[in-house]
Length: 254
Image (cartoon, rainbow, N blue to C red):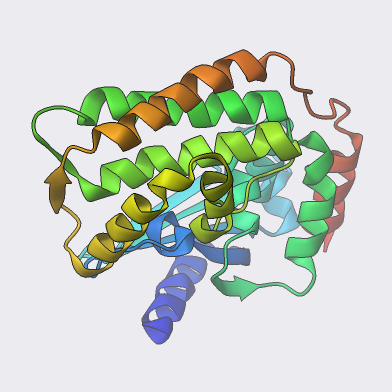
């Protein structure tokens, strides 16, 4: 699969005439709970040659590509967009930079970008973001007598991410296993339930379901309530864009 992914990225760079600075895995494979038939969510950060930026026109700053078999799902952002999103307290750049699977990287780029954007991480905005994801999925998907296994994880991961943020006031780890100690410390009675769900998801297709788990649902909904109370007291990120501009100029000028 590695060779297919590299060829996929090569085709994009040739077509668009840009350079990939970092390409990583996102989604369930990066989180650590893929199903056997999970696709590959490839996310990348890129730059164009300097002249591409020297125009009065707004240019598209996103690239999206998917293979015909839908196995490789690629999306990339121009460096300027990544920095703008970090300034606006978007959590995606922080998640991408912590991916355990790196497909391509310009030497030193990931560490440099991380050091640059970390002061702009907003614990308050991040908690609201993660709680919003969890609340939306739980409302839409927790219906009937059965629930898709992945929908439990799509609520559990952001809930634990939010809890990490309000405790540590730092970006949560991308790898789900690194969040599990929070569950074991706060709700050890759910350890076996989650472990069994992980085993089932690893062996089952994406649309596999399980009977509703009221105890797990109650815990997660309680965490949503606690998170809302805690969010307002959390700090916001650095608001001076100077460091972001300096990093942007340095990378784009080469």
